[in-house]
Amino acid sequence: MKRGSFHKGLRGFWWLTLGFLYLPLIVVMLFSFNASNSAASFTGVSLRWYRRLLGNDAILSALGNSLLLAVVSSLLALMIGTLIGYGMYRHRHRKLGWLIVLIYLPIVLPDIVFGISEMTFFVKINELTGLLSPGLATMTIAHVTFQVPFVALIVYSRFVGLDPTLFEAAKDLYATPRQRVQFFMLPTLKPALISGFLLSFTLSLDDFVISFFTAGPESATLPIYIWSAIRKGVTPEINAIATLMMAAVALAALTSLVLSRRRAAS
Image (cartoon, rainbow, N blue to C red):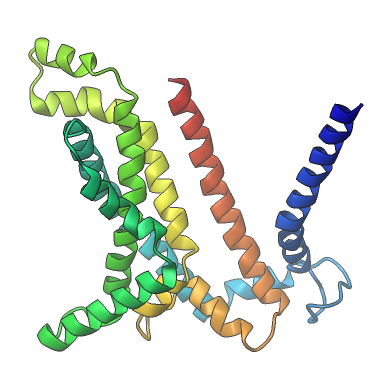
């Protein structure tokens, strides 16, 4: 009896937690289809705010910057993180305590601390050399910096899960280094690489703090645009933007989850 009551209470707490997490998101999605100009009262279903988004040049420019930044930074983070993950695996028998700390540091640091440090660094570099003025270039470097540790850990965990004798077998078959990479490592790492890319893409797409501190006047991303627009009040147009961003992030997260499960099953 007591065990049944405990499980019922735990189930109720579970649903209550899910409600607190997702009900606000559902409300935002619902009001994005509001026919009224008010964000406080729902008067009917309409797609006017989504049509209005397509005609807003500022939003389209911010969206383009967000997608360009996310794709470029994710690809760079994927390449650098993969090399770091492979290096960690090759030297796993050595003491890598200091390297692990360096890998985890960008993950555990608060975003605002990371953003301020990146901004200070770029300002000093610009003062000394005239390079790296605030814009998409500085934003890309900053995003790559905090994305690389996530990719490195994903790739490293994939390598650790492999049978070491597979590498020796490839050598015994007289496969060249290029052939080992092309026909063994890349197919084996494919789920981890895709997961790392999607995670980096998601982190970049919904980032605000780091982008805010490293952005230039012509490089506003969608989160920065939302922040600047929301100071005038929450409108159904903002809800529509937020809904599209949630849909994109949810799609990337679900794809990464499916690939992670396939990786675990293999």
